[in-house]
Amino acid sequence: MAQKKRPKRSWLKALLFYIFFPLIVWGLAFAIWLYGYDLTRLFSGAAQNSKATSKAARRPDKSENADAAPTNRPQEKILDEDRKSLEDVLKRRQ
Image (tube, rainbow, N blue to C red; front, side, top):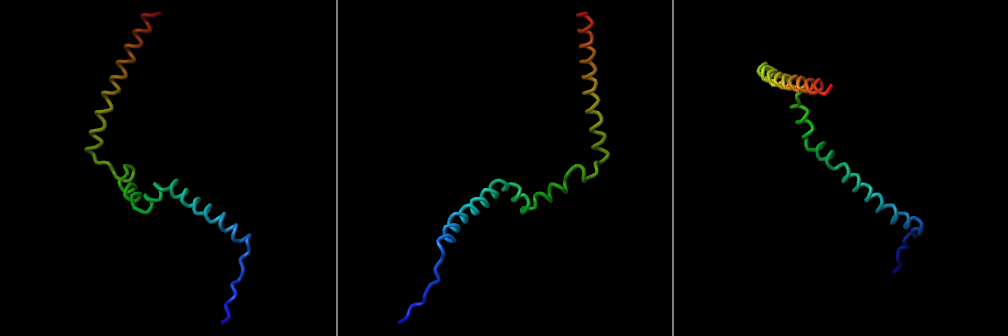
């Protein structure tokens, strides 16, 4: 019975395949490792959820504005008091 002849692969093609195929696989694995967090966030839909609940996207209520204003004023008063005390110290040194 006659056997079928196999076409011979050139040794150069085989060598290039065995060199470049592992490098390509390694490069893909490295890219996935490097950008893994971004890829999981992209495919999980968490990016869409975080965009929807950002402060810029939603309108603040009037009660939130009323709460924010008094908290800023005491800080300014403290800064003014510190500034005055520092000016007093500087005047005493001169």
